[in-house]
Length: 455
Image: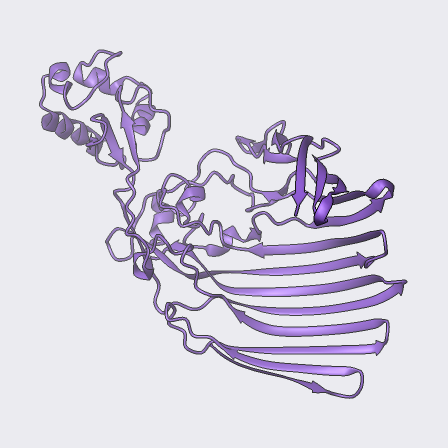
């Protein structure tokens, strides 16, 4: 890393700051990571300041993000995701595409495999007892069953016996080369940030401010299936451009934007009290469904690949955990009898979330999304939140500079029912009756007592 920076005084009221930073991270292939910085401060009078800044900021490589990427020094992870059928297709909990459960559903008889091989309807079938139940060796049983599936006119995953459970199973991860690879060249993530702010002393140390921030984020690191063929969308089954297994590739595929207006008020230290408050109006969007590199394959939420690897804009929406409105106030006051009362209030509009309905495979990669058709990622907004936490403290002096204090903390003073989990379920193509309501609330009012000793 190399940087240069200097200030220039352009008259008595204007200061110009220019800088240039160069960062090289050997993990990435980029070598042209020049990051210019510009700042201007204007003080029109003794009570007012105006500041503006712009810069390019490169992200430092984070080992935690790439812990599942062997090329970047992470572990060589492998995942086995399988559907087990202890009672063949009779008690399959999930009708996945290409599964034995789908074969039974298409036949209209959950016991169709039992009847084909004369297996009692209540029997549990394993590699060890299949010969006793059917008169066929395990290999012969599998050959006949796979033969029936292969001539059914549908596409089904191969069936064998699980080496882990002994039950009949289908390996859902068989079509995926479950080692995350790295796109080359790897572009370094960076953002361009612009900020404008005005601050003014309004009365006896009270200070008000307004700040606008715009951040454009490029080369956000994530995963996508790089060799998925567009033919997969029409076929409804994974087809690769190179004829090989699906490749999950880690690279700078995604981007986002953040805009915010921040209003603030600070009383400064006013003898026995001090308080500060801020309100933020923000809009954050990106097209990264999930930054987690978990190796699960069952859903996008665990699998980390986009909803549609053929159209990354399909996941463009409000950023996860973003809120449109946020108000935060904190402060303290010293009361008679040496009582110190402090608190913090945080109130926000609801967090954005996506709806969840019947599974849909939008791009034919074999991984189904729960996002209903004709809805956008994080399109909906949950209930607002408000939480007030207070502390009352009383201290008594002891000999030789020691002191002891009693603390009383009350969390969520108003016992507000703030959401932890939100009902996002669609029933068919429509929102459910309690859609958007709080399913599981955060903790209610809590009281905590403490003793503090100083020496």
